[in-house]
Length: 371
Image (cartoon, rainbow, N blue to C red; front, side, top):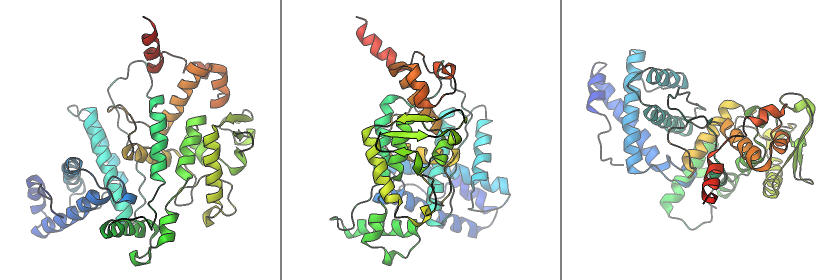
C-alpha cells in the first residue's frame, strides 16, 4: 500500500540512527504493517473498513511522537509498546503545561487504535483505558451521556455485533479482508474460515449489555455481577436480589423496555450455545471468559463511541458511569426522583436528588416554550 506521507518522519529517523541504520529499516517495515492494517481495518475491522486518509495521517504523526518518547524512555530501540507505557506517556502529557486537553485525548485515542492493531495481529489482549486529567470545566454539571446519545449508542452496539453473511454478494477482495479479520479474531487459518465463522461473528451480547444499561444505569460492577437469574422476561424486568445488590440493601425490580427484553431473550438463546458459559450463571462474560469490570466496560464503550455516530462533546472523556449518570439525570428530571431511586437502585433519595438539576435538555425544552 502506498501512503502520501513518509512512513518514518525526519525526527524519528534521526533518533533511530543513534541506535543503528538497521533500526530505521525495521521501524519503517513495522510502521508500514501498522498503517496498512489501520487503513484496511482501523474503523470497522469486521467490515474491512479502514480509517480515512486524514485520520490515518493524523494517527501516524501522533504515533511517531509516542515511539520517539518510547525509545528515550527505554533508552533503546523497540516497537513493544504496552499499556504501562501508555499510562506513563499520558501522565507526562497531563503534566505538560502547554498541552491542551483535546491533544491529550487525541493521543489517547490513537494509542487505543494501535492497541486494537496489536490485539488483532499479534494476539495481545490489551484493554487499555486512558486516564487524562482534564482541566476544562463543564460548568456545574458532571459529565454524563445526554439522552440524544442513547439511541446512537445502541445503534453502534448493534453494528458492533453485526457481520455480513458469507453468502452476501461482495467482491473477492472484500471477502478476503473479512476472512483475514475473522482468522485473527478466532485464531484459525484464513483458509479454514467459512460460513459458520461469519455467522458466529454476529452476536446479541453487546446490544443486550447496552440496552439493559440504558434502561437501568448498570454500574460496571453490576455488569460483571449480572446473572441469568436476574432476567424476568415475563414481566420485562431485571430483578436484583438483595444478596447480589451493590449496596446489599434490598431487592430491586428494574423495568426494561419491551425491545430490551426481546434483545435479552435473543442473547440468552445465543448464550446457551457457547461452551464458556456452561455451568456459569454470569449474564455476560468477556472474550477471555472473565467477569466485566470498570476497565473492560470502559474499553467497550470507547470502542462503540469511536465506531458509531455517538454525539459526545470533544472535550469529554466519557466512561461507563456516564451512561448511568445520563440515565439517572433523565429519570430524575423527566420521570421523578422516587421512580428514579428505584430504577437506579439508590439507597437514599438524597442520592437521587443530586441528579435533579437544570440539565441541558430541560433548559432547551423550557426556552422553546417560554415565548
